[in-house]
Length: 152
Image (cartoon, rainbow, N blue to C red; front, side, top):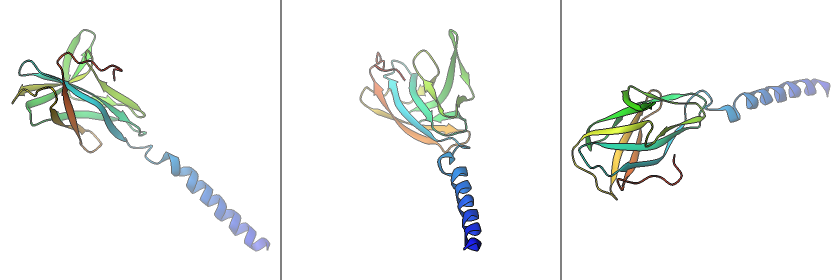
């Protein structure tokens, strides 16, 4: 009887270690991104802004490195520092955090619009990241004066 007890205890201990080391910590070393609250205020010129929130449920940061859309000649990522905005190569999406692109803050700039999208339409945008696969987002066009009730 004792001969069986020791191997069984070793096996149970090994299983507990395996479960404890994997399980709920899976993905802790990589980003897990989702996108919410996208919108574009209806443009009044050949440029437009875009806003959204990238949520990272994973245990590693990622970076938004570029954006593309067939509606614009180019889409650039801008950061707002103090009272000035400037184009940037990337914005960080922190581990277990979020990157918020909002009016008055960090945002997307659609330049050289090929056409002016109207309220009620959707614009397809592809977000490119340093680590994660690209994410395609359908961005609804809202009124030029639209402000989300809950923010981002």
